[in-house]
Length: 187
Ligand SMILES: Cc1cc2nc3c(=O)[nH]c(=O)nc-3n(C[C@H](O)[C@H](O)[C@H](O)COP(=O)(O)O)c2cc1C
Image (tube, rainbow, N blue to C red; front, top):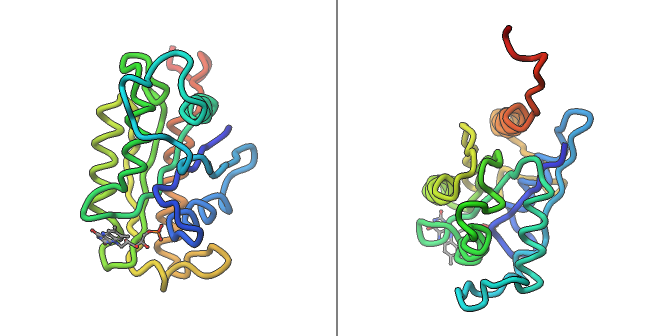
């Protein structure tokens, strides 16, 4: 199973990208998490450019999402909302609306900020956007406040409670993404 990790931050030393790498350390056998690095390249959404073939970076975004069994987003909070470049990428991903690549895809949202609240408002906004697109947004939230104190230089969460919350969210995401086989259904 492949989980795509999407960080809402472009910053080289991003706490949110580190949080995704942290999540990648605790995966069951057979599950991999790849951190996507194409966000910077996505052009501003312009409906006039939303044609077939799509701009190269947009095609790469849609292909990365389509190739994943699930997506784990980690977002900073910018002015009480999600970063513009992340929203812009999701606007591209949301088209064509009825068949967009995130529709029915299991997704989870976590977040980190340098303030006290761990990007909770941004996470709520991101869940709303993803739900609007038809993604299957799983329960669970991880709010890493004061991220500079809680993530060490080896991408580990120093607070065991936060580390457990990350594992729980990722496990919920994995269960949501598991294929249901006929043998698993009640007769
Ligand atoms: C433009 C901008 C707006 C921000 N607005 C908020 C905010 O509303 N709430 C908050 O908790 N932190 C805010 N921050 C601080 C970010 O949470 C902090 O920079 C965080 O480390 C960014 O995530 P990153 O480390 O993944 O890049 C803001 C930072 C920037 C650059």
